[in-house]
Image (cartoon, rainbow, N blue to C red):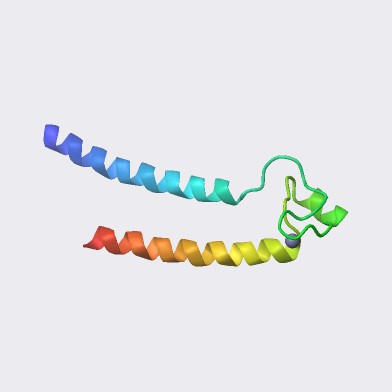
Length: 88
Ligand SMILES: [Zn+2]
């Protein structure tokens, strides 16, 4: 019974860890705080419509999409890396 407990616990730990990772990822990509009048990256004015549509927006559309692409590249790279290390 003790063995069964520890095995269940380990599986649950892994599930918890991956859920936390996912939450962290979502959190890090959500803007927070007040919407900025000007883009944090290039100081171009952010359109009023975008500031209302995206609470806490910090980047204009062009800069945000560039950043998203960079993050997607990094995330898929990291995901591959950690998956490989689990398999070995
Ligand atoms: Zn910008």
